[in-house]
Image (cartoon, rainbow, N blue to C red; front, top):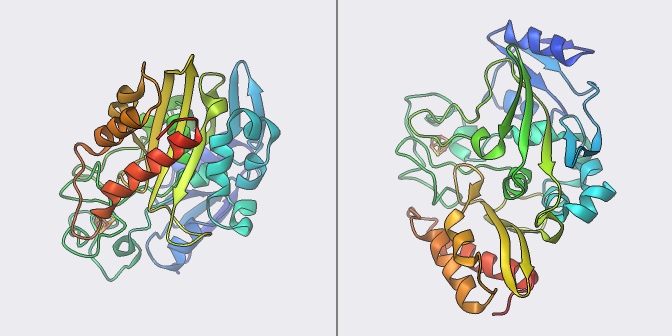
Amino acid sequence: MKLFDYARSARAADAVRLVAGHPGGAFIGGGTELTNLMKDGVLAPDLVVDVSTLALADVGMRRGRLHIGATARMSDVADHPVVREQFPVLSEALMASASPQVRNRATIGGNLMQRTRCWYYRDIGSPCNKREPGSGCPAIEGQNRWHAIHGGSDHCIAVHPSDLAVALTALDATVLTLGPDGRRSIPVEDFYRLPGTTPDRETALRHGELITGVDIPEGGPAAGSRYLKLRDRASFEFAVVSVAAALTRTEGVVTDVRLAFGGIATRPWRSKGAEAALSGRPLTRATITAAGKALVEHAQPREHNAFKVELVQRALTDILEDLGGRA
Ligand code: SF4
């Protein structure tokens, strides 16, 4: 691992100033992601600014919104009574992530900044446009079982890895930041970028801009929300496909529905087409099937991941049946 300097700030503004003033600077929270990437030589910051002790760990309702501070630990958020009772999709997504040890250490902000699990990205002997712009994307013609069927480009087809981000997408969450130019509130759907020609730029964050928390609107279908994750083994594994679903029915008719998906796209994938197929209709076998077809209508499967096209439709069916649909 390359040598680096370490600093810890008592105030968020100081941490931002330190990283913003240092081109090779990076924030570190729980350290469960960045240190692995540093040890593997994938990332090599020369200054690491520890934000784990900033006073940003509060969780609770604020003016009709659930606020989750960026340095709150995953396990604390998953176990918070308001989260479990009013936003179950969040609690389920967090509990389906990583291992108990990692959840006790990792922060919410760090979870949102996870890097892809594409093995070419994490193998510094392989070319990779995301790690080394312009070097190529071996996944497109290579081993792409884990890769995206939505949102890819000729430059990158890596899937986004965070379960939490998928749940937040279904809840219309907002990412709160503090940067050198002040505070910003960024809708989570705008926070993650499609790879396009610049897959190395994954988020809307500017250099030195720190995630301070997330806000989630109260009410709507959040209380009836669920998260379903399908993976190759029962724990400590990333999603092959996942679904975050939140819906409200009135007299049997779907009046509010939000569907987001993980494991199939280059960013947390909201499917407005699938939502439209359900909205204003009863939850029946026919409407659920129509939603699944809309979800995969423009999918672009590759040689080894075509199975995701059917698997994600089955996952959607399962979760909608769990929420009260009839197959
Ligand atoms: Fe790199 Fe993206 Fe291609 Fe994976 S899919 S090798 S992360 S450019």
